[in-house]
Length: 112
Image 1: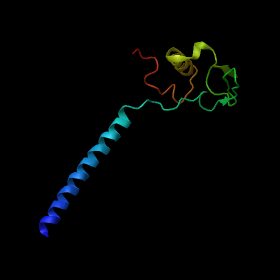
Image 2: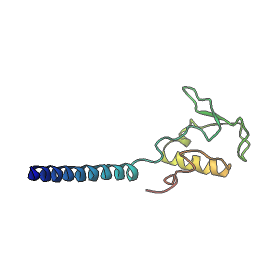
Image 3: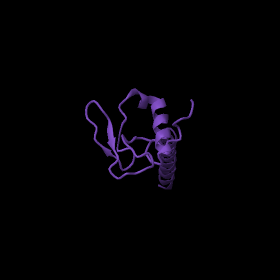
Image 4: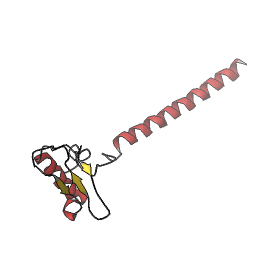
């Protein structure tokens, strides 16, 4: 009977070690190989998104930043793609604004 118990504990220990290893590898891959940021906001923080089917209009209802823009249209090709992300970041930083997913994105404006 003691032999059965030792075999069971050994097998259970091996399975536990394998499962913990798999979970650790999965967590590592999720943390270090996922895209950041997972979601990019359409407008700068605390701006009102009044977009429609053709335009992406953001309105500055709280008069934030230093650029004195009441509204900004981000629907043009100038604001799209990797270069557009860099332009958004430079514009937001120049206006002293924060934009989740843009101004805190370390990959914006970096050459690949």
